[in-house]
Amino acid sequence: MTTWHWVRHGPTHQKSFTGWRDVDADLSDQAAIARLSDHLPADALVISSDLKRSIETASALQGSRTRLADDPALREFHFGTWDGVHFSDVADRHPTLSRAYWETPGDHVPPGGESWNVSAARVAMAVRRIEAAHPHAHIIAVAHFGVILTQVQAVLGKSAYEVLGQKIDNLSVTTLHPSSGQAAVINHCP
Image (cartoon, rainbow, N blue to C red; front, side, top):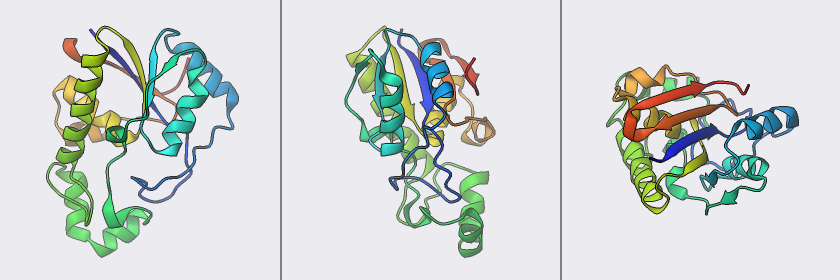
């Protein structure tokens, strides 16, 4: 059974939608990164989305662990024209759609972006591909809030709306055992 240790990338300090826009992570809290690295299995494989905030965080955690190629399928949700726009401005411009996007996530699509269901399917295919290539491994996957939530949803069998309330802090670990339906969410490192 593959065990996933989903790590949310370091903070970006963005005050807007941040999907496929490539922004740096703030990795200045070296003590937090060291605690996180020490908490994660030493023999785990490390993989990251191909956005630099995740790549930078994965590099900081890698140590002597084997690194897999960065995977574009592990990118955050594609927010289309909402990317880089403050949440209140999106709500003003697209009041019905933005409300539906969060209150009934599923098939609602931001202009030029992708829906929750499309994002979740993209991530699920990547997870299956990685598990097939590395059965029984521990995998540290450095990714994004939305990506991690899709996997919590898949493992626990909850609705998208139910998992949106799950707290996933930057530099937190969400450990999932997909085949057993078990999840442990750790929002800060020990």
